[in-house]
Length: 524
Image 1 (spheres, rainbow, N blue to C red):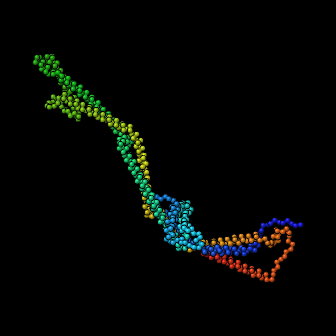
Image 2: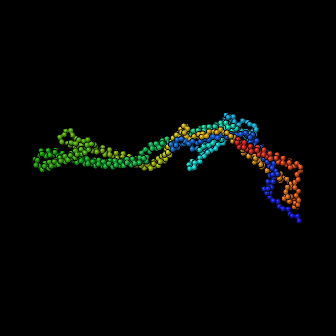
Image 3: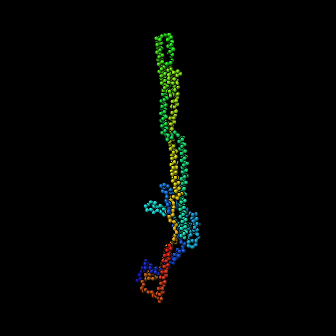
C-alpha cells in the first residue's frame, strides 16, 4: 500500500547550515567584492575636516540692580537673528572670495555639489546651542554658550574659516547690541520730547485757566471764606458806626434847637428897660432875673456838652475845645461849633454809607466766587487730570530715558552682555567625513545581504534531490536502496587540492578585510 505524501516540514538549523556550506562562495565572494568596492570608494571620496569653536555668553559686568539693560531680546532669538545675518549671501560670498572656497571640482565630489557655493557653505556650517545644566534649578535651561562647526577639505582651511565665522559672530553681537541700545535710547528721547511738549501745553492750559478764574479757585476757598467773614464783620462794625453817627446827628440837631430856644428872647434888654421904670424889687424884674439866670444856666450846660462832644470827636472834626464867653477872644460861638459838628457828622455818615456799600459789593463778589467754586473745581479737575497724566508719563519716560542712557553708555564701553571665545576654533587632526570604519562595515553588511540573497535565490531555483526526505516530498514512495559515492582515481587528490585553494583564498580575503577595517579604524 502506497502511503500518502507527508506535509512539508520547516527547514532546521542543520538544513540552513547545509545551504551555507553549499553556497559558501555565493555568500563570501559577493561580500568581499561589495566590501572592496565600498571600501575603495570611501577612500576615493574627498575627506572633510571639521573645526569646532565655542563662544561663551558673558553676562553684564555691572550688576543689573545698578544699571538695567535696555535690550530685552531673548538671547536664543538674538543668536538666531545673528545667524541669519551672518549666513546671508553677501556675508558668505565675501568669505568665499577671501578664502577661495568651493572651486569647481571633478570626480565623485562633483556629483553631490549643488552648484551654488553659498548653499554649499551653509550646509557646511552648523550652530549648536549650549544650555545651562545647573542642578539647583537656577538658570536651568538658559543659553550659556554656542558652538560653531565648519567643514572644509583641509584642516587649516577649516580652522581659518571657522575663526572668521567666530569673529563675525562676536563683531555682529557687539554691533547689534550697540545699535539696539542706541535705538532704544533714541526712541525714548523722541518720546520724552513729545511728552515734554504735551506737558508744556497742559501746563499752559492750567495756567490760563487759573489766571481766568483767579479768586474762585478751589485752593482759594478757605481764604475766600476767611475774607468773606472779615468783610461781614467789617460791615457789621460799619453799620453800627453808621447808626451811632445818625444818633449823634439827631442829638446835635436837638442840642442846636435847645440853644437857639435859649437865645430866642433877649431877656437882658427887657430887664434893662424895666429897670429904667421900676426898682429891682418889682415883681416883673424879679421874675425876669430868674428867667435870665435859668437861661444862663442852660447856656452853660449846652456849652459844656459842646466842649465834651468836641473832645470825643476831635480826631474827626478838629473843633476848638474852649466854649464861648470863657475869656478867649477869637474862639467860635457855640452855634458855630454845633454847626461844625453837624457838618463833620454829616461827612462821617457819608463815609460810613459809602464804606457800607463798598463792603456789601465786596461781600456779594466773594459770595459769587464761593458759588462758582464747585463748578470751577470740576472744570479744573478735568483739566488737571490730563496734566497729571502727562506729568506722570513724562516722569516715567524721564526715568526710563536715564536708565537707557546708562545702559547705552555701558554697551559703548563694552561692559554689557558680550560674546567671548572660550575655545578657539580647533585644528582637526582627523577627517570628520567620510567615516571609513562605518563605510567599511556598511560594505560588509551590503555584501552579506547580497550574498545571502543570491544564495537564497539559487536554492529556490535549484530542484535537485539531495536527501531521502527531499525525494519523499516529490514521489509517493519509500527509498529501498541507496548507492554510495564512488570516487574515480585522482578525484580525492583534486578535491583536497581544491579545498586547500579555497581555504587560502578565504583566508586571504579575510586578512584583507580585517586589515582594511583596522586601517579604516586607525585613519578614522
